Structures are given as C-alpha cells and as structure tokens.
Image (cartoon, rainbow, N blue to C red; front, side, top):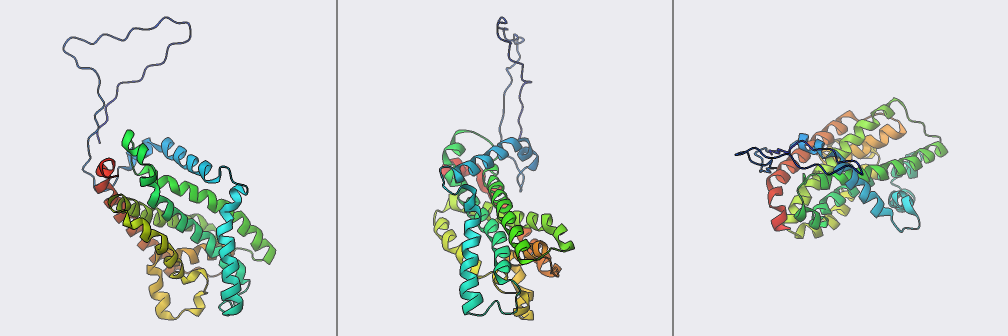
Amino acid sequence: MVVSDAEPKAAPAPGDAPVAPAPIAPGAEPPLSVIEPGTRTLPDLRELWRYRELLFFLALRDVKIRYKQTVFGVGWAVAQPLATMGVFALFLGRIAGVGAGVEHYPLFVFAGMVAWAFFSNTVTSAANSVVANERLITKVYFPRLAIPLSTVGVGLFDLVIASLLLAAMAAWFGAAPGWSVLLLPLVVLALAVSAAGVGVLLSALIVAQRDFRFVLGFGVQLWMFATPSLYVPAEALGPRAQALLPLNPAHGLVAAFRQAALGGPFDWYAFAVSAAVGTAVAVAGLAYFRRTERSFADTI
C-alpha cells in the first residue's frame, strides 16, 4: 500500500484571522492520497500498527455494546464457564464417574472452561465481525484485519474477569499454582493467536458464502466435545490419544492453561504441538483474508 499525505497544519486559535492556504506553484499538483492494492501474501503489520488506535476503540466499542443495558453486566463473562462447569461436574463427575481420581473436579472443569470460553467466543465473534460491520467496510478505508482482531480484546476482557473467579475458587479449594504460573502469558498468547487465526479465516469464508455462519454454530459445539481436556484428565487417555489429540489446538492449549493456572506437571508436548498447529492455521487464515479482503466491499 502506498499512502502519501501532506503534512497536517495546526488549526488557528480562536479569534485569529483565517490563514489563507499556501498558493500552489504554477505547474505543481495538489497533494494526493493514493490507496493501491498491495502484493503481499500476508497483511502488512506495519500498516496495522499505524491503525492501532482504531483497533483499540473497536475493541472498546464491542465491550461496551456487549454489556450495555444488562442487569448482571460483566457477570455474564463468568456465566458461560460457570454454568458448563455445573453441568459437567454433575453429569460427568457425579453420575458418569469421569471425575473419579481427580482432586477438586469442579475446579478442574472450570479452569478448562475459562480457557475454552475465551477461545470459542473469540472464534465466533471474529468469524461474524466482518459481516456485522458491513456499513463501516463499505464507507471508509482502513485495514480490514482490524475488525476481526479487535474481538480478541473483548475475549481478553472476559478472560480477566473469569480468571479472577478462578483464582478465588482455587484459593477456596486450597490449590496453589507452582512455577508454571509464569507460563500463563505465553499460553494466553498461543490461545489468542489460534482463536484469532480460525476466526479470521472464517470471517473471510462467511463473506464469500453465508452457509459458514450456520456451520459455525454447531461446529463450535462439536469442537467443545472433541476437546476432552475440558472434562477428562490426561491420565484417563491412552498413549495414542495423547499423541494425536494435540493436533486439535484447543486440546493442548486448554490443558496448558489449566496446568499453568492450577499447578501440576506441564505437558510440553501437547502445548508445543497445539501451539504449532494453531499458528499454522493463523498464517493460513491471514493469507486467505489478505487475498480476499479487496473484494469485501463488493461482496458483502
């Protein structure tokens, strides 16, 4: 992208006489802003950095809209993982006996659901974000990638609120994190990259074909049940399952979040494989988004 602008001039103070614009020299052309399609395979991160304030305000707008005119306010940030924890703890932990041998099974499930809620909500919000901002996209230019990426900020806000409740529950059950708590920022970063990558890919696909919006709804639900680290301890899985399940990026990253937040042995293999797969999906999603974003205003 090539952008050329004249140096902005300060506005005159109140009461000052209006300043006439500088005359244009004979034969000279007035300054122009030229926007051209780039040839990069991946989005230009430098351009995205120049629009960082827009990215921040888009995320802030989404946070305000999400909890505007609600009775419980930010309490809804913990409602989803808390309700799911209750269902899993009752039906899987008590009735099915899946939680046998797991100390503090409700805490075990809730820690996983906090990470899953961040992952799934970010994927869903990012996937629908481009279509939801149709009027903004068709009226003004800005890096289109800022729209799906801004949903990560909303997810992080919910994650912080839910993590405070997780810390309170851990203190109640007497679970103290070990040295692995230092890995928590790295795990959250891997979760954000993976969720944003899937969401960016789906956002471009939904613009091209609206059928993906319906696939997204039940696809995320199936994905949750295909992530056994949410409700089954790793010891209950066989060696083959432990080797293959990290190919699901949510599986290894959810388990890593729990291990970092609550302590216990850290599964480096599952974390590394899931993070690598999530990063690969993110790169593929960014490349596809970059290739199709120039036609968003016409297709949407």
